[in-house]
Image (cartoon, rainbow, N blue to C red; front, side):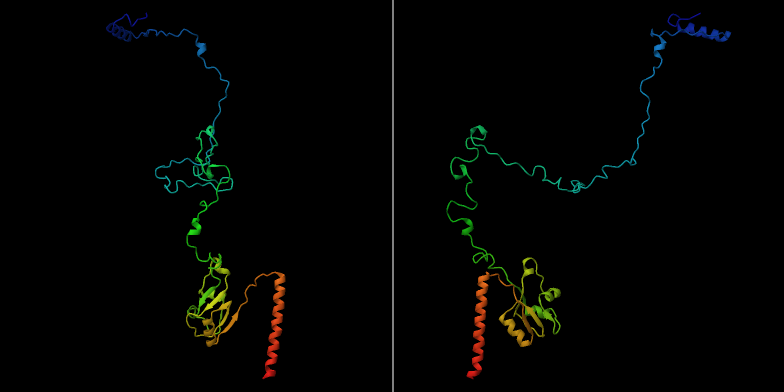
Length: 277
């Protein structure tokens, strides 16, 4: 006998269950109705056209959790890049170079009637304009200011022609008796350290100071006071020849003829002096 839970009160239902347990008879529970009206066959799983595949992920590096706040680079090194500079990736910084403004030539350019050239004047008309430094005919600035040393007599007029060394510096260098004093030995002793243009200049000995040792000097030039002091001490002086100035072949021929003429004249004068004596 089927019992309906909606028709039987709760008290009678409890009494019926207790009686059934006492008589040991199977209890029939009320049927549960379902709103499903279709066929159960449709609920069966249908095979899918795609086959199940297993994804395998190969990690080249082990995963690790890093604290970004602790491992943040310094502000100075934040802009550094590990890209190697090459000719194909060199370029100015973005925004540092701007294109020049293209000035128009009329009202239709949208820049006004004069387009930035002004109303009148040589600079507003076509053509190359004026050269740099031109001030309309008056004395320009580069001619009004005082000139630097050497410009008035030529750019090389004020430049040094020798590396100067005084006798006082040679005495302090502690040369031994009989040693050679030249441009190379002075560099080794640290007396001079020429750089730039001075590396190609010759040596000149000046006479400031005194020398107490007998040395051998090799230089391009000697001052008058230095020559007298060195000869009084007994030093040997050697004047190194300079670089010959280039002259035209015709001028060189005339100079050779003049040298030969004066050499014969000096020889004749020297031969006539003993005869007259």
